[in-house]
Image (cartoon, rainbow, N blue to C red; front, side, top):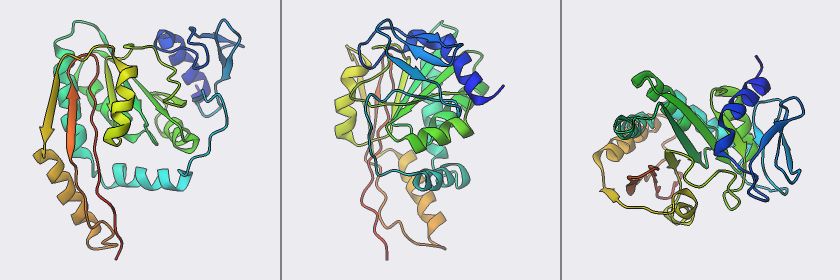
Length: 252
């Protein structure tokens, strides 16, 4: 089965999670399962690489394939974020344990090249008998193309978070790795009510990440002079949001 067919199969199973970014109506699969279409005939094709482009107009970003490949080398090759991923996986696993549902859905907003989401979904699949469905969305097509290439077990969209193509509260968990301002702008799309806010200030897990990454770069480029993870925020309801803020990167 190629990536396009695999994407169509997963979309068929999870269509209830998404809607048309133009009109908000539900999607159906048409054209022999090669396209998503809403009742108003807004149609979005499944790309041969195994993702769907839901942008409603052309968008230019500064993020190219080379940048995302470099990011993937850091995440996968150097395993810099492994301590953080383990913490996220354990927190999500605890949340799932209190839920009797046999499936959990995870949305990664601004997923980049998909390594974070794929690692979390794979780890959870090994820790639980529940079905784990992961979906990533990003404005940069090069990142989503790499996501679909390397991680075909998840669902990938090119999309604008200002026109979210997913149903409100459709996902059990949501991951956001971004600036605090962006996170606060997006919360309104995720859940209409947030009951409990738990904040970890200067968590030791982030300090260990900084030490690990600095040690990796020291013998070679010594590029990273300042790495500060300020805050991890967890919203305990139907979504978990993690945000990391970085200090500026200076070169010698």
